[in-house]
Length: 488
Image (cartoon, rainbow, N blue to C red; front, side):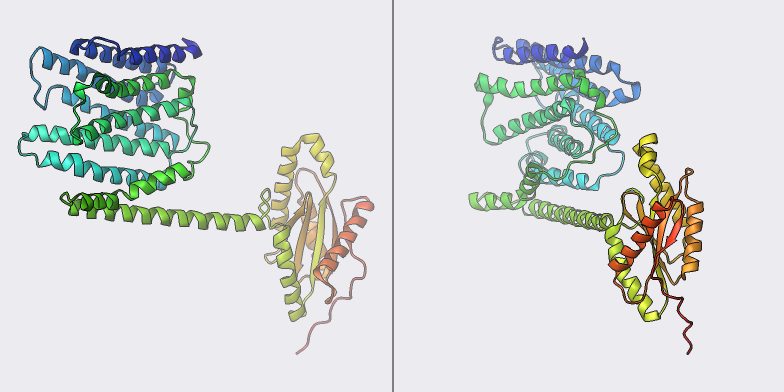
């Protein structure tokens, strides 16, 4: 079907869903229409993922199984109602309807694991916050009434409880998927929309039932709710047929999205459900579900605290990373010019107090531009990195090598006489990698000049080395005689 297959299927599904409002008011017509759209979505999923490797089809097979079971539940329900005249809950259709939730939840979990192999605790906390907030509502208005319903047999109560629990499971996995890293193409948003549609359809039924509204008497409303589920079926089929389905389970290249304003707003609303529910019950005079609200509030509070601690730690890590990057050359890993400018005044002050010599050398790679033009910028970057590593290996423990800019480096040689500094620099020249060389200017501190003046003298000596033919080390003029040993 190529790249246009999903468009054709989307058109047919849209026509089928809209046509659902026009069919005769007959249980058989309605069931047949729903089953056709449901099985059509199953076929679209299986056909769409045939181009994927076997291992990558498993999440989609989970979706297809869930859709197939749920659609088959419609067939069993119409047969039980119209042929066997069995309408009491639970029916044989309920296990098939319920299989949708674990099947889709497993599919979402597998996709999330493929997109983001590492644990994302922040996303798990976000999913837990959503699930806890809505779970409290589900307990108060659905689960608790069903649990203690005296007129319903035990099996019927268990089935009634299973539906909201399935919705919460589906919601948790869906939120976790949405908070994962990786590409977010059309297929991603369509399966997300399908999960939201299933949850929204179930929620609509619950809300209407709790309000005492029987939509079976209103054809448009009744079929409108059914159409939500038909949309959920079809979105899975569109997602599987779209070319972007190939990238849906690829390991994340980009990190998980940060907390956007809509996401932060949603988390805030979920966190406020417990106090809002308590306020509503106090205002209306209805019995207060104290234990459930206390437990829900406690869990939500702890989740918010955990999330805040995660954000604080993330901010601290980013601050440390910024501080490191501000003082470290990104390419070579050496201290950068900012770090050097902070270090040199301290080194000179220590030299002054201890009456010890200190030297500075400016190093410039010879013919670096020609090397870059001949071998390319990646090779030039490798030369800079390898040279920095090789030079650092022959320096003494207290010496400091920094990248000054471009192909220029600067070395601080504390407690080194001029002769010793020259020996160190010659060793560095000998180990320069890739058959390259450098020119260097060496200046020993005179005991009174500023760091800028010392560097200017070293830079002038470097210029002399380059003018004299390169591959050499020149000592700056105005050197002082070696200091005499200090006698005590």
